Length: 136
Image (cartoon, rainbow, N blue to C red; front, side):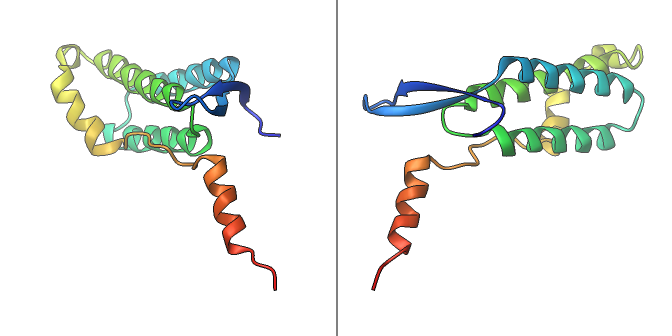
């Protein structure tokens, strides 16, 4: 059993059966809240160290949750974290209140990788292992 997912019977683009795995909403909300609290506690730390910490959190989340059919939630987590960090940075000082999205985007692109699909579709993984095992 895979923990942290709700399993749903679904169909793919071709109309074939597809087992969709979605992150449990409670876990998603709890993790977003934890990240938000930690960002506020790191408000006055160096931008680079906070960005590296946030990158490790987002990468770790994506490494576990980036399965086929769940990328919408992984991208939503990325977006929430990035936006919350901008909110925190804007609250640092009067100068930072005017931090524009274009300027901030440079930090994000420099420090935080975008989430990507990590795990393959299960049928591809099983088919590949079946080809390797040969009798006789």
